[in-house]
Image 1 (cartoon, each protein chain N blue to C red):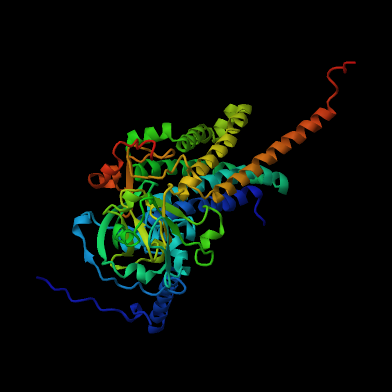
Image 2 (cartoon, helix red, strand yellow):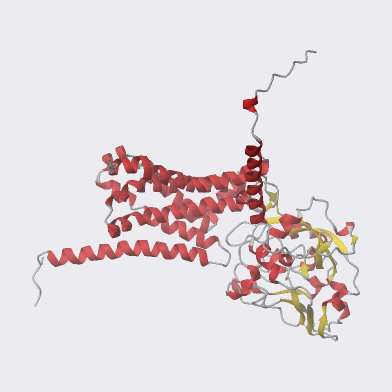
Length: 224
Length: 314
């Protein structure tokens, strides 16, 4: 007997997505633990001469990747007509928050060695860090309201609140763009994908407005 | 002391020979695959050992970074913008035969074979601090000779106020130059008194051997009180000028990179602090190091900048 959609998501797709989301963490942890001899020195676990920067990059880019994948769920649903994809979105979004927190922790500890004075100065004075930190703060209410109970409690306001994901994604990509020294090719790729994902929504919104205004009766007679 | 008699091993517990041989083959296969992915397809010729003396007076006593760290973590955009790119791509550079053009305000000019450039100079090892503008640092045992000795041979005229260093342009040898990340060739420069300073080294080696390509073979500059980018690599031209050279990073982003680029913990990069640095190789949970004025060489070089506003001349 074929599995129902419910069961396929619960026992197959969701666990697979969950494991896939943990791969970057495994990579980073493997790289951190390999020099201590706890793990075999596989080439994959060689994070190079500057493991701190490498891990910061791995978890940072994973955050961006997950934000973009989360934003791609709705367009994919509409294009493929497979409404069930929405069942994966919460996990992707919460993982984006998880990696954003890890990115911040790696910055606080290994990168800044918990030098609070320097950290506060960075957040206030360095525009790209201010951007990243703002995005992280904005992710907190989204993660906090990601449960079914909160969705029910907030009703329509839940959707309004979760539109914060658009400015968060923009800030995240901007944060990345602003910290590269000269080679903006990779941030440009992120920005282009984000532009497509947000542009698609603008276009949809425009379409809906056009169709509703066409079908609506004229509200006021034209002045002559 | 009680010595226990070993328990008899039952025949069923002994692994048949065919099985354990097979197991060994699998493990060997795994190891082989691992090693193959680490080694480059064609390993480069070993770097020749150099004849040199240690110059303790010009060396710091901090522990040098490993050869591995120094030769795999490089900013050398001619071979790619990732720090691991130069080590992966620089095998295409041919550091021999090499020639260096001497030009501009000097009595002796022309194109010289590298061997003629190097011949009169005795090599020495100096262990210098290295501070990147990106707020990381290393300790590096360079082999080279004072730039001032080289400059004197070409008799710069009184109009020679600056020295300009140009890096090779060759898209075949330097694949990173196929993209226009920077305005090639890479140009750097020093004021003539900076160039003549005894600390300023023309480096030709690292850890007692010739420079690896990714570290700027065959000839690179090393002024240890300045941020790393000031030190031109794979130099093909040295030019004496009256005007201040237009150094590449200054041209690309004038508000972020100046001409002087002296290490200065009190003058931040617009996007990050220069007050402290991360020492490469100290592991994942290391403390940061305070950045020292002029990278710790203030006693020797501060007088070069007397009366100058270092905030403006960053």
